Image (cartoon, one colour):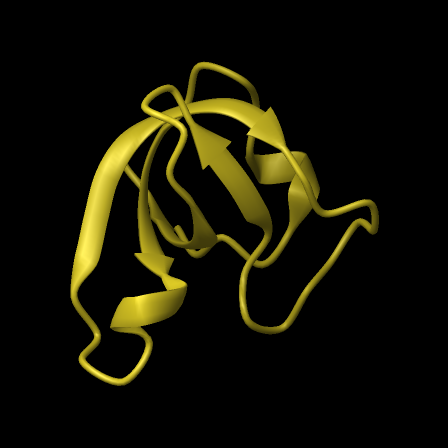
Length: 64
C-alpha cells in the first residue's frame, strides 16, 4: 500500500520512508511512525512522518 493518503497511516504503523537526502537514490528507511507531519489528507509524493528514531521523510510504502 502506498503512503499518499493520510487515512491509511496511523501512529504506530510500520512504514518505509524516503529521507530527503535519499530522494535521488531511492534508498528507503523502515521504521515506526511517531508523528504524522502532513496536515492534508493526500500528498502525491507521500505523507510526511517522523519515525520513533526522529528521522523525517515521506511514506513510500506501508508495511503490513
